[in-house]
Amino acid sequence: MILAKGNSVTLDGKDYSLVQFLFLTPSEHTISGKQYALEVHFVNMAADVELAAFGVLGKEGARANRAWSKVSANLNAARTDSQAARRPHHAQRASNLGTSPSP
Image (cartoon, rainbow, N blue to C red; front, side, top):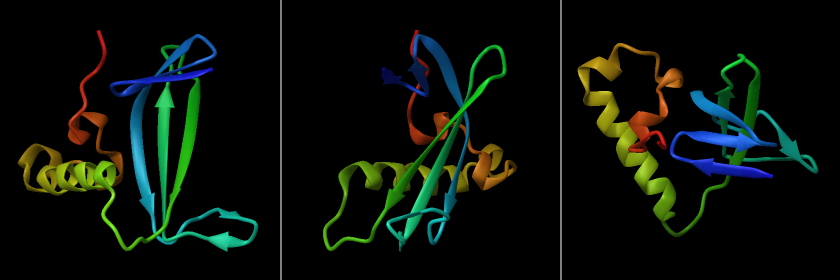
């Protein structure tokens, strides 16, 4: 069972915190030979340094995606933040997505 909360995920009872995400255009992976316009990798780490990575494929669409619009707006805002601008864009932490850690 996978439970997501804030910037962490619980996988089989073990908590993993988001440490990195990166965007690939076009996608690195395919499904049945189909390549997608976008692939996002979410890399999560547990306290014992074990990693859990998740990938999400995205396609272009004619209508706006509300969830993606929030991510995009926060990424654009992070680019203007001088502290965030000093970090590589692929290594922005989940706090730049507008989420906060769960208690």
